[in-house]
Image (tube, rainbow, N blue to C red; front, side, top):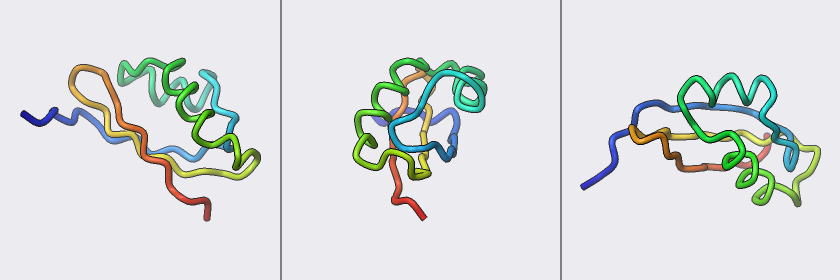
Length: 74
């Protein structure tokens, strides 16, 4: 059975520089997402694009897990 999506979060963060402070912490914390898990995954996937603003889409599921969709920088 497919997971139920509770929310979609769209962010733009500099590659390799995600941290749990605002705006990331505020956007994800209010939905119950594990901030450190997100930061580790994002930073690992975008370390080669350090300094560039990377668009990210996060479907947040009802059990507070998420999928990380990293887009190309504009």
